[in-house]
Image 1 (tube, rainbow, N blue to C red):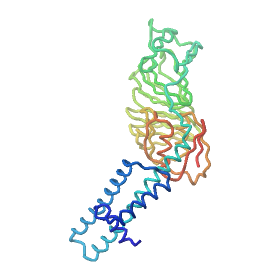
Image 2: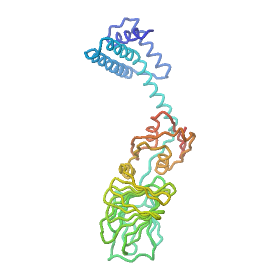
Image 3: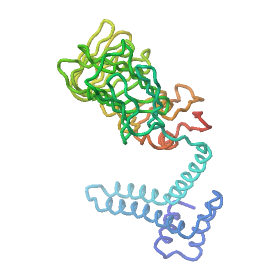
Image 4: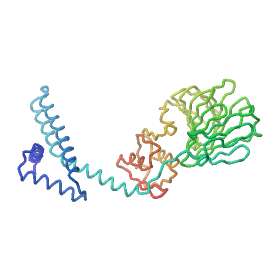
Length: 384
């Protein structure tokens, strides 16, 4: 059937002027598509399909009217463009039907590949006090968990771990620190004795003294954390991580020090910080990110929201490569990725999704590129 004939057939069908033969032809085509794709459509679904199809073709007809009313176009140009629109309208039925079944088939395909979905991480961590006691914060009760050396440790109703000074405080425990460790699929928020708030990402270890009695308020980080430091001009706040030291007076910043061999990133949101590495030192301003790599510090302007997406309960990607993304997913969902594609096949991604959705929701978004597929099998996700 020629394009013009298809166009007339569809138009008659939608206008209600189709002959019995024409109506039967369209109905037969739709029914054939339904049967071939194993989709048993009920009356409501068929009505919805027809409504969507009509809206698509009406949109094309509107374009046709707008073009014909555009007197600035030469008649020959108008005729050519109207023919293009007519051809587009003629194949819309096939496009709509094909799109519906493509979505359905993709959904069925995913239901098999995502059968063993993985739940997101949550507030999970282990607290090790300076005196050696360990407390599993994941299952701990709300309220006071311990007292040690003039320090009270409480778990608030919202899960925040609060350290507060009691009995006029105490002394440092001979250099021994308290530490909080989050596993894969874990995170935690801590309120330090000086009022500083710290958000810990998955697979992170954070250590700090019971009391900040020295000239500096020094803590140690292995992993990723976001800090909102309480202001104290007399006692700078220092974060030590592998090969790097960050000094602040009172500010908001994020440090990613998971793998020093790939570089340590410090992103500033508010205030000012001084970043020191072996033989190099830089001061960064809000909206900037320092990268310490091979004993050199580079500073670049960035979107800070991308650095603290995890703290805000999101995954946000902006032209981010797949290897970087799967590292984040591995830590948060506690899964292992098996790559069955070459590095040349690894695309970049942009988009956002909640960190509190199952992993399948993130994978669906990544699959929209159409170039890769994910297969979930327990705690192993295969990329093809």
